Image (cartoon, rainbow, N blue to C red; front, side, top):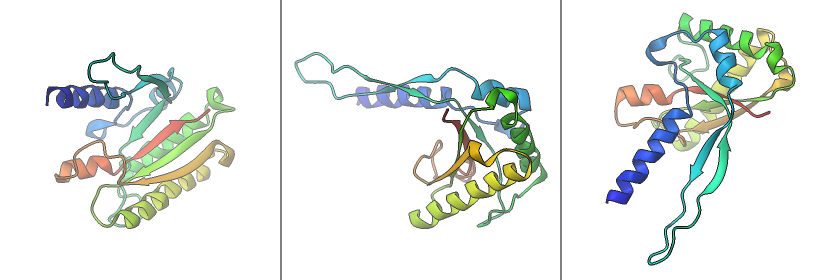
Length: 179
């Protein structure tokens, strides 16, 4: 039990230190976005089983690419932005991705949903929403060659889906620097 609690504590600490969440609907400004996406990749620890009576197996070494999580809200069951704050945040993101610092960079736009509805439906919805963000960024001057889109559906929650607040925070868009 103690090992499980320790593992979960370490996992949560790593998860939350590698993601910047625009909490309380504060607008993340262009310079902040640029700084986050230019950050050094963070080490990501993958745990291995410990042999009983033997030494622990070495942890696998990997890195987590710089990423920024945005609270972009959509109308229910739609790809239409729900509010002016979401539009304003995407405009700041477009300015950041057009920055000279990212002249040769590539980014993944990852769409995420909560667990309401079927897994297949949520996967398709997350794809459509990530596409909507990509199209918004294209319309605001970000080159198509800089972006790829991936829907993750409900597969990578960052909060429990058993409360309305948790589900709302799981409906998000993550911009990850690939190169």
